[in-house]
Length: 105
Ligand code: FES
Image 1 (cartoon, rainbow, N blue to C red):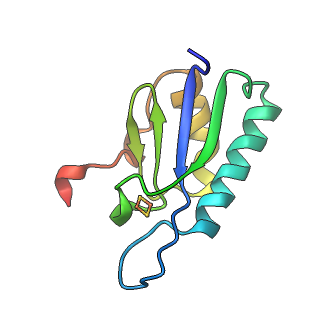
Image 2: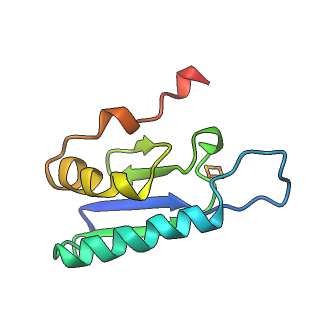
Image 3: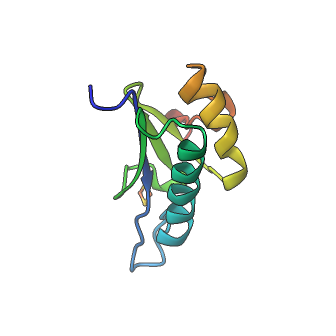
């Protein structure tokens, strides 16, 4: 496997303001911070964070998904990134409070 963890962060921006979306601005802010922190921690060769189109979690944005586990996080803010990296990416313990409950829609 090329990367141990692959983080896809939605940066989808809808033209139609009546539909929920994560938004390019908010998504790209998360992508940039993730990349910076992964590099600072020397994890960037094993873990990659990148922008993605809609990951079908629009009502929970800003949304992202971590593979290979396929854990979806919603309502992610820049303040959550350190916890996601240390708990989930490094210590294999997903951040429960941010996990999207798709059954709650
Ligand atoms: S717009 Fe972000 S998940 Fe759909």
